[in-house]
Amino acid sequence: MKKSVLTRVVVLLIPLFAGLGQALADEVNLYSARKEALIKPLLDQFTEQAGIKVNLVTASADALLARLKSEAKLTPADVFITVDAGRLYRAKAADLFQPIDSAVLNSAIPQQYRDPDGTWYGLSLRARPIMYVKGKLDPAALTRYEGLSDASWKGRVCIRSSSNIYNQSLVASMIAANGEEETEQWARGLVANLGRSPTGGDRDQIMAAAAGQCDIAVANTYYLATMLTDQKDDAQRMAAEKMAIIWPNQADRGTHVNVSGAGVIKYSKNRENAIKLLEFLAGDASQKWYADVNHEYPVKAGVEISDTLKAFGEFKVDSVNLATLGEYNAAAVKTMDRAGWR
Image (cartoon, rainbow, N blue to C red; front, side, top):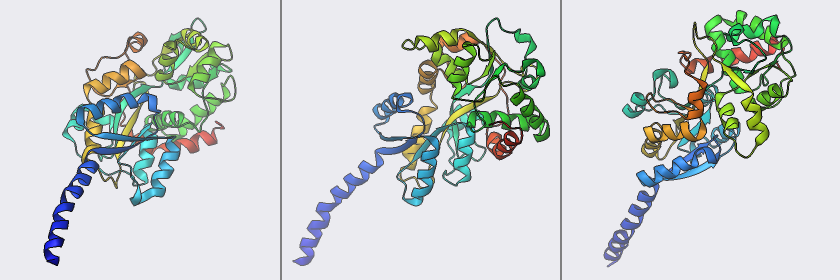
């Protein structure tokens, strides 16, 4: 009789455990350094199409990296999304990612925008060109990043601090192209040409230039495009309208670009769903959404960009693999420090 009762209990529990397994199989946990508004609509589309619920946690990139390190094997996270190849490299160096091999991702995302070991993949692009106040200079006189150190631009340049990962990656790309010694000399010249102490974010550099504190700003295209289309902040839109873009290094290596990107967490408990999410974000519809709504360039070729980005014009992109930016990050930080870039 005891055996019969036990058998009946086991039979009754089987559907319960099966249901629990199905619940776990139909979700994916995402840690995102991108703000909710910049990714949640895509995640909702993914849930609708794939039937997989996305549990979203948002915070700063550094906070999420620290959390992932602290949680270690106990982390509930399956995917980590952040901006800048330098941060993606840091996550890889901390052994937070696992390599994956997806034919969908490898086909959609060019090699230069993904880790050679398959631990992270770029999902959207932003360029970091030189911007200038219309009428304040002849753009033909400044055609390369290297030219920013020329004495003719003394007191005319605005750029954010050396602690900013975007600038660190720009300097890393220059070290990859020109070597550390030459890049340090360039950085010293750039610092001598600053119109003000590095303060604020990319938008602040554009606002400062428009306000007459400098003639030249270095900033990501994403920020300029967002300011141009801002219907709620007249001051930002009007400042952005005063600016024009120089695409640097078109006669040689090309303009520096960077990515937002993602990887599957090493201890992911929903690995297959995590890969499905990355594949969805690399698809045509998601790539076009990034371009239309966030004014970012698609990593996937052939996807149409927003009218605002089209107005910026076409440009040659630096072909360096973005993993190199992470590899040279430490050297870039030391170079900037030695140059007095604060």
